[in-house]
Structure formats: structure tokens, C-alpha cells
Image (cartoon, rainbow, N blue to C red):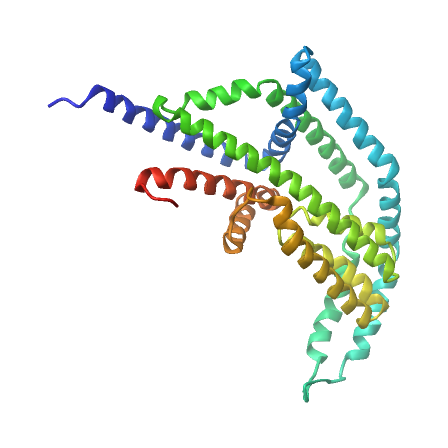
Length: 350
């Protein structure tokens, strides 16, 4: 008995869709070294869509609407650079200049501990071996190796070219956003296009909430960390706050990574101050991650911490630091797909 033509056509559609997905994954893997500009460009195009759509609804051509939004973004970034960045750069420069004295002071503190057992709960702990290891590597860690002028120039040129590529990608994707969505929808079999529309809406809502939440969390952690460093009398609190805010963009782990420079600076002033810095950063991070983070994110990203860590590892293995930034949104998208498909396959809630 020949197969049902309708069923055979559906199977071919499903196979074609899976094949297209596999090809897309292979292309992304081959372009992984250049993926940063495309990911950032796609993120910008995604974030400016509401503004572009509103301007277009007022009768402004889409190309001009995108150009106006880009001008607003550039003016806002320029204002940010003129108002804030010079202060941060100055303090970062001061921090680099003071690195030798910080390293020397920290070494003196560590040397004073060598051979002096610490009594904890009646147990003497000899820190000599630990302090010798720290003593051997601390100065190299703080001072590092200064790059040559040629290397710095090439890095600046590469960064500029990547920035231009980011805006080109963002412009093209924003210009053809509707066409791109229609192309994806056409790859889906007719019987499943309603499901595609539902999943697309959920993913958009999740991504907007995720990006908005991450920016709010990073801003709060950077602000509170800078204020705490200033209150403790640490040098360069603005630079330390900026570092804490930027690293906080890495979900969950970022705030703890951002505490390391402040702890090292505190160590130069004394072990007690370094301990205070660590405690305050720990308190700030935990309060924000446990109380503010769920309120800001809502139900956008519902992932257990274990899955978040697994996503980080997979993202870092795939695309380094950038992979860590996009790991949670990708994992959350897979969660949305699972929540949508599972009840239809097994006729019970996920």
C-alpha cells in the first residue's frame, strides 16, 4: 500500500526543517571566531525593534527610523563617555600606576604572616606554605606584562572594525527583521506554524526581560560596589565599581569575579580591610541575586542553578567569554521549546 501523500509530505517538511537547523548550527560553528560582532549586532537590532516600529507607524521610512535610533544611541553613548568614562579611565590609570606599590604593600602583609601560625578554634594552622605560593605569584598577577605600542594599535584598530561591523549587522537585521522572521516561519511545516508563532512571542518576551534585567542588576551591583569601596576608603572606587558592574553582566558568577580586584586593593591596606571588602561584596551580591534578581527577571528565565552552571561551561567551551554571555538566553530558549513541545508529545504538563 503506497504511503499517504499528506503524511509523506509532512515527513519531508520535518526532515527539511531539521536539515536546515543542522546547516545553521554548522555555519555558526564555523563562524565562531567572528560570532561576537554578529551576536552583538543581532542584540542591538533586537532591542531597537520597538522604537523602530513605533517610528515607522508614524509614517517615517524604516531606513530613516533605524538611522534616527542609531543617532540617539550614538549621542547617548557619547554623553556617557564625556561624563563618566574619563573619570573611570583616570582612576584605572591611577590603579595601574600604583600597582607596584600595591604589590609591595601586599607582599609585606603576606611576608608578616609567614611562619606565624593562625589559631582557629584551638587549632594552629601554619600559613607559611600558602603565603609562599601567594608571594611568588602576586606581583606577576598585579603587574602583568605591558603590551607594545604596535600591539595596542592593532588591538584598537581591530576593535574599531568590529564596532563598525556590529552596527552594519544591526542595521541589516533591523531593516529586514520581518523578512527574517518570515523566512524562519516558512521553514516550519504548515501544521506547526501556529506553534512557531507562540514560541516566537515567548522567546521575544524572555529576551527583552533578560536583557533589561541584566542591565538593571549590573547597574545596581556596580553602583553599590563603588559606594562600598569609597566608604571603606579604597583607592579608585569608581574604577572598582565599573569593573564590578561590567563583570556583573555575566549572570550569577560575574559579581564574585568583580570582587577580586577590590579584594586585592584592600589587601594592600591590610588583611582586615581585604576581609571587609570580601564580606561586603558577598553581601551585596547575595542580596541582589536572591531578592532583586527574581523580581526583575520575573518568569522570563526559569532555570535551576545547576542548569545555569552547565550552560556556562558549554557556552565557554563553544565561544569563550561571549559564549558565557549568551549561554543563559540559549538555555532559556531551549526551556521554552521543551515546555511547549513536551505536553503535545506526552499529553501531560511538563
